[in-house]
Image (tube, rainbow, N blue to C red; front, side, top):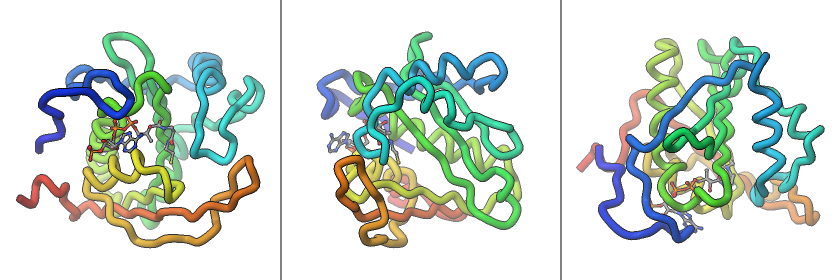
Length: 190
Ligand SMILES: CC(C)(COP(=O)(O)OP(=O)(O)OC[C@H]1O[C@@H](n2cnc3c(N)ncnc32)[C@H](O)[C@@H]1OP(=O)(O)O)[C@@H](O)C(=O)NCCC(=O)NCCS
């Protein structure tokens, strides 16, 4: 597996990240919720239906309970640069798990998304031996998310027309991706 950009800078202008620069730590809902809410309220989420969350809205984003939702910080050298939520964990046995991934604005375009999708995919299939499929939806024009998914073996399974509302009233299409346990990453197929 080669997910490391050899040289240069990302679309965001910063240096590419090495996977070993990133650390993933599970969030304790009882003690960590306020920090997550501050993080979510501090950044813009341009492809989400709500591109800005105030503190109250951010505090209502579910981070648990862990039999349904598990949440993690993404950190680089001790600085928190993103949040992952693994969703629908109560569907592991007979459905699809989903996830929500949000990287801080200043850390986008440097490989964090790609490495994180790699980590969470491996973590889900390792921690849940009966899990067969992970599902991911994103706005069709969210190219960074789509490329991060495709680099990790997620396959485009559908384009759901005008199903993704946005704050400006436009209904965007949704890209639906699936990753089976048996699927491989493109660079593993070479
Ligand atoms: C979507 C998101 C998680 C992707 O993470 P990221 O760290 O920015 O993405 P990466 O740097 O890992 O880049 C992934 C791919 O997208 C490409 N890319 C990154 N930014 C891009 C941009 N602005 N335009 C086009 N392509 C871009 C990268 O080149 C890379 O592709 P490649 O490996 O084929 O070269 C992150 O941008 C984010 O948190 N955005 C806001 C929240 C969001 O939209 N979350 C997804 C909700 S479904």
